[in-house]
Length: 361
Image (tube, rainbow, N blue to C red; front, side, top):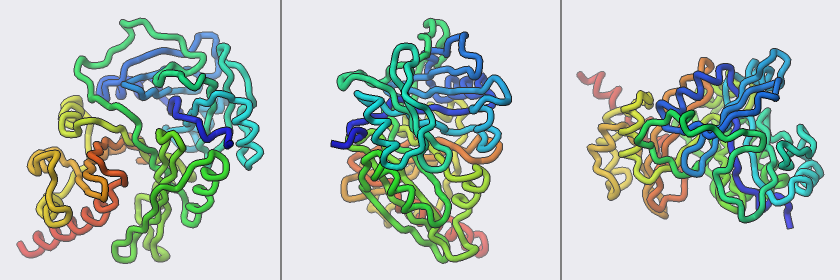
């Protein structure tokens, strides 16, 4: 039995240069609540834990120039540095991961009485391990985090209603897709659940989706599949600006994307624009949608797609990072099991149609 096969998502850790600004943004705009802070006895870094539903985000800032957190931020900018997994036996899982080729970055040790360890993934993304019993409830605070007083939470009264973390988008350099997928298959026992090649003219991308056995950790791993010199800009630019492969975005799952996006826009979240022609072409492309009104989607800029399982709705925020290397996605699934592959080509065709209309005018 693979020791990591039963591992589940525990929390996601961001390394940032300005913890107060990041936390303020996540609380005031995304309605996360401050759940706890690191002990004042920790001298190398400062952490604040945020929670919404079962999602726990840990935001960490280095307190000295020599801190590993500070070094990571200087190299990559703000971003997802560590995706922590919970497992019944940290030592067993850690030893098996290292034996299967993972690089040890944190030997098994106790943190506030809880065993933890860590190893490198692909690029400078890491996976921490936290020992929790099989029946542990999701949404627990990371080890070493002191629960916050109720008054410390400044989340708005109305929540965006994120329920789960749907997936991580993991961008890698050209030719690295297979190695990244192999890492997750051999080290963590993940399985490939979906793969696709999307081509638009001479530009395109290859993607494979890997998922853990429990189904709560999903990586959409993407590389360029373009002709030389014609790589999709967002992949090449991300890898360059991020100084290597890494997590481009996190997708938050919700039960009603129209309501969630209305709330988020009301709090100042800035989303990517969708050309009007996209919605003009949508009925012919997927046969219309049942869950939401077309004009609601158009008014909010929400994308729609359909697969063998049902409908999918998604929208992406503008990146607020100086390097333009990280953003969020909001997603609602109504039976759909894939990741909006039809939207890449649809957006290209919509922009092409709008350009033609402008030229005619």
